[in-house]
Length: 206
Image (cartoon, rainbow, N blue to C red; front, top):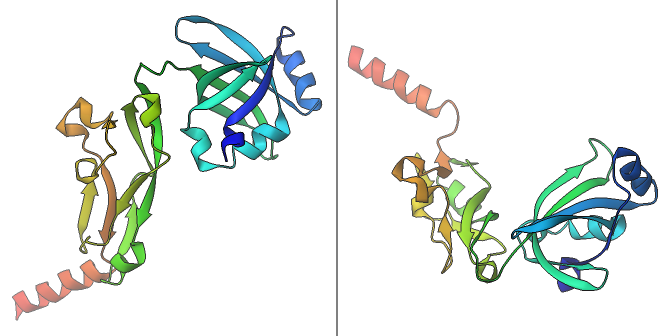
């Protein structure tokens, strides 16, 4: 998997929409590298290598190595533009990183034991599928696990209920308690609550 996170790139000087169009026709992807107080660099990458790498979930939060004319640069993928209906990557934005500086990334969530939770008679609903986090580059998790086995029907897990890896903090929770987002819920099946309300009304009338 390591090779998927190392991409070969060349500096490009031919800029503009026309140049980008010509690159795509040649099965290449235009990109830009910026950050850490350095000048942005326009790059060209092989589309087949980018397309293969972007199929991996970790590609979007993993520290990547971009070899620019043979010189390795560590960075994160900050944006990717895809063709609206073709299987083509149109453009990439890379952010330089420094091992000693915290970075902000979105880590995907892996939900565990969903079937076990739904045996209680409810339906699992994902409120979010990734968590905005801050940490040093070396501490970036490939994903964050959220175990829903103990969820009861009608219960919701929030960000404050999620155990984050060591050295990792939630960007939302850092803003205050009002930003304690819902993560996942075990909801009663549709119609059950309505039937319960009707039954209670009948009992009350009787």
